[in-house]
Image (cartoon, rainbow, N blue to C red):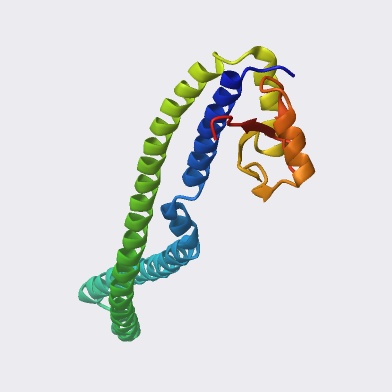
Length: 242
């Protein structure tokens, strides 16, 4: 394929821009905050599980407290009723029976209040643990949010720089002859690199020294004829001023 030395030099410039874009894509994927965010996934999950476990425990205790308070209210209502019946009763036997029931209800009331007090003390301890796990979860969430924002900021910065390079690349590509650009793109797609410089005896496409026969053949080729790196297959651009 024919291409003037200037066109070949433009290929090198295009490759430099493509290399810069590839480097930016790697930087975007390898932002240190992204790795930190992935590394704290287990910590975040553990904090959420601890929070949910204590929350379930607290909910269960509160439900039991509510049940006890309801039972106490029922006992109190029965005591009030029995006391009213005793006050209105004229039959000694009925009054005695009601008094016995009052004694049973009084014991039941005491038992329920003891259980409620015990449960309230346990719930107070659970509340303290709940406050602790809530604090831990908030701390983890704040760190996650900070990392997410740092990632977004890093991406915006890289994307802005990449957009400027892509715009420059588009202008440069417009200066290249169509068949040369297509050939370059095909090579870059297949090999990962489309063009590289021949610097002395070294092919920068493969970073290897060419054999004497290979070098002689390349240097003997007309300046406007494309040559390729024997090792990598990429376009090899000669700089005749060296």
